[in-house]
Length: 320
Image (tube, rainbow, N blue to C red; front, side):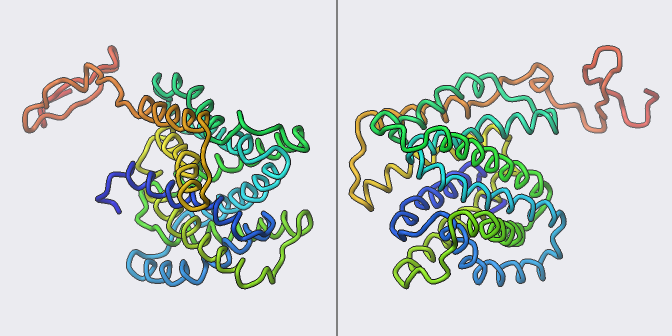
């Protein structure tokens, strides 16, 4: 994966996760049950991969960060399901995607990583496109707008925290299966802690439901998060969050192909807006004058001049 463009990895991961809503609907279970089995059924696949990876690359560092990220993911899965029940899938999808704003703000606060101007301009277009793609213009406000909005914003904040911690924990690391295994354990535990007393967790949903949940575990939890986990540490915070906005667009496409859903004109327009915003936000930054300078001659060391802040050159061995 290290040789593959991280943007392609993020897009592939978003594609796997975009079928999660379809498989969840086909399973017919509560969001707490789906969140629990999504994690539990992924463990038999992730555990051998993590053990093999541990033998090749050594034990995983920052395991506590992975586990904390998993707790946030579990909270996101349960809260998002509750938001869907109250305001509908369209508005809930918009609310959970506040991550596209929260993740860059966290990166700015912690690492001083400033978002680019194209990204700032594209954010309103992104959120508007997600709203239309989610069908907001074609559905009502739901049975409990206030509660649904609160749960949706909570889910979006938890999702943003998960993405941020995943990016932080993956920096400089070659592990892929071990962090997903640890975060999956955390997510499953949180799904039980929140989902069991609130919505209940059905441990015997039936063979048909288990089949759909197993597919959900393989696509959304194993493949999706391993790909995204490999991509996020190599991308800027704004770029990673923006590419993940392709999920609702791909969900519309897969919904039409698998469930026979026919998106309306506003949903198609929303998909186009999201794609345009992703393209705008992904534009490369303007090259700074210092970056355009020719390379220094061999044996030259660049240092920063304290008076001007510009790089200065000095010959190796010369006084500076």
